[in-house]
Length: 443
Image (cartoon, rainbow, N blue to C red; front, side):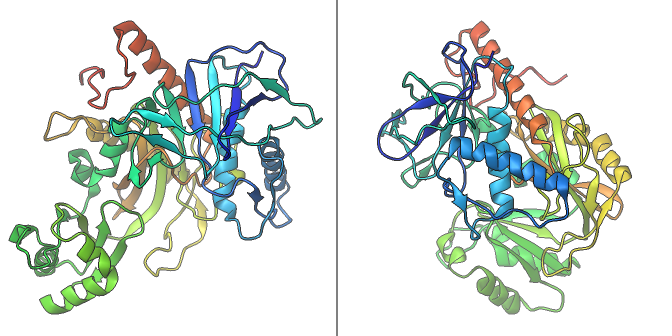
């Protein structure tokens, strides 16, 4: 019996729900799952090039499922292939869970919005999308129901937005607001700093107003790194993936370093002037074999090499294989040429052997009372033969590469249900408090 239902939240002010190929009675699910595609849902990419029958078959399955949900979708050569595959993989995984009971699936069209009033109470804007049909053209209508952002849910996709204010709805279970914020702030996490294996500093830009401590001013930090013998530095805007650049230090004067910084970041410097810890500066080191691990509730769920052209369509092995063993020595960032893909189970084994300790340190090594994230994305690499952490990301909208997403989905669902049961026992209203106060103490 299938109790997994899905609602497509569209764009004209109403809500309607359908159930695919199921005659089971409607029940009210305790757990909601909200998927938010990152592109126009009426568009699909062109099929992959001929020659890989397995990949072509997997693509066809994703297309069929996508058309179940968005029957008006058409091929569009402008759609990013990898981006679409990742979204379609998530939708297919959640729709395909026919044995799990008590899960309500909502798919939000990118144009739909969920607003919050001044007191952060959810003000839901309801939308309609054409009812999906099964492959024989029959679609059984369910009674109208609404996504409730104040009730428990898993968020799959970009964060919810209220106007221009990025926020999490009160009911978000995975990732929780705490986990998302803590992962985004990884540059100050003691566990990350322990396993980074390179010089890392947080700093700010002073536009002459004197709002920044002299030792924390970004040009001063870069000059100090040059004097310490570092040849290059990687500068990142803390709040966005777009702002990243390599700054040459060796042989440069303070004035030249400042000029290159201004050339690379331009108005980003001005806009962030005086903002504490707006920039992360780290020594550039030779990172090899970058690998992504998904951590759910402090446990490893799945992993894959950071190979840009790979998607879940390229995954090897069966559903029980959690970690793809293909990696690339040089990823191709910062002007480097990407190296060939290699199958290196020995490298992946070293990552898995070390990952448990790293995850534990990220969660529990801290200078304050707030714990680190328990659900997040962990990117590892090799630096001079040692396992190091590249970065952390929030587990809401991340690249899958050749990931076993079914395994990720299963762990997320089990973790959410576990938190719901814990909340029921403790009689709490919010299943996962932002303070993570319900976590057990570290052994």
